Length: 440
Image (cartoon, rainbow, N blue to C red; front, side, top):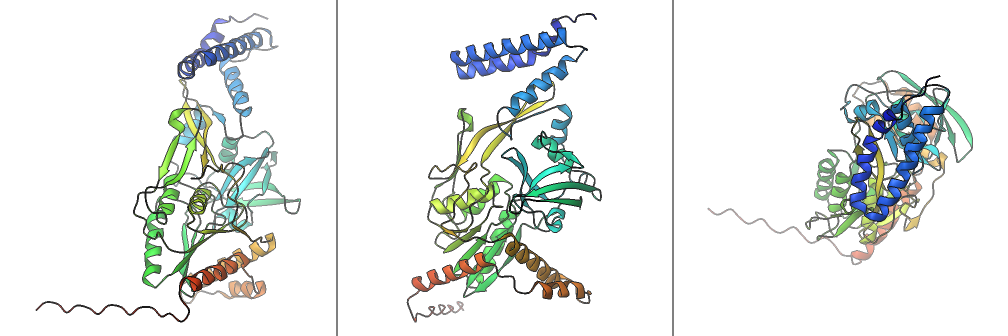
C-alpha cells in the first residue's frame, strides 16, 4: 500500500499553528514552550496514523477527531463543532425547527435535564428537573456531546422524539415519546396579590421581553397596594444574562455589583452592576428556588441574597454557572470553550455548588407534580373561552384533591410575619392627601 506524504498532514495543522502562535503571544514564553511541545506530539501522532493506519484517512477527519478528544478532556461544556454544526448554531431557526422545551446539560457525565420549561411538550409529558436522559431514539447518550444531543432532540414540529430517562429519586427507567413543537413561552405568570397585600410573580425563563413584562406586573401590583413580594424562580432554567441582571436591578439600589465572571484571560473578567435607580429598593421579598432553578435564576437569587434584599427559601439550586465562548477556526469550524465562571457579589461560585437557601423547605416529587398539575388545570379552566367543555379538566382537578404548595405557604407565612413586625400593632394606613383644587 502506498505511503502518504507528510506534507498534507502539516498543511492540515496550519490552523492549529496559527492558533498556537496567537496564544503564545498572549500567555508568554512558558506557555510558548508547553504549547509547542504539545503541538510537536500532535503533529507526530497525526503523521504516524497517516503513514501506518491500515487504510487511508482524511487528514481533516484526523484533525477533527483530535479536536473532539481535546475538548472532551476539558469539561462537559467544551466542544468542537464542525462547520455544519457551527453553521446550524448560528442560523436563526424560528419557525423552522421544533423542540421539546427542556434545558439540558451534562452533570456527572450524564445528559441531565436542568428543568422542563412550563407548558412545553416536555413539561406536559412529565419530565422532571434532574432526570438523566440515557437514550435518544434507542441510542445510548453515553458518548454524546451536549451540542450533538441538542441537535438530535431538535426537529420539525409535529415529529416525535423518543427518549428514555433515569429518574434519580426513584431509580426508575422511564420511556417518553414527546411531540416536538415551536416553543413559545410566557415567562411572567400568575402575577397577583395572594394574601394581606403580598404580591406573587412567577418567572419561568429570562427572555427578551421578560424585563418589560415583569416591570408591568410589578407596577400593577404596587398600584393595588402590594407591601411585600414572593418571586418564584422554581424550575426556571435561566435564559438571557442581561435580562436576569435587569430583574435583580429592580430591587438593588446604587451602583452595586450584581454578578461577575472570572477567567484566565483579562477580557473574560467582567463585572455587572446595578444602575443606581432601583424601582423597589426596600420591598420585603422572599425568593423561591429549587433544584430546577439554574443559571440566570441563580444569578438573581445570589445577588438578592448577598445584598440582603430577600430571603431565599426552598431547595439548593442546580449549580449552572459557567461561561462558554465560541471561538471560530479558519476552516469554518469552531471551538465552544468554557472561558469563565460566574460569581455572586460576595465571591461565591455558582458552578456545581448552586445557591443555598436561607430557609430550606423540601418538597417530594409527588408533592411537586400535584402542585404543577393543579396549577396547570386551574389556569386552563380560568383562561378557556366561555362555553368551552371543561368537564374532563374539572374531573381531573377534583381527583387531584388538595395539593399544598408547602414552599409557597411557608413563604407567605414568613412574609406576613415580616410585614406585621414592620407595621406597628394597630397602625392604619395614612389617608391619601387631599387633591389640590385646580387654579381657576
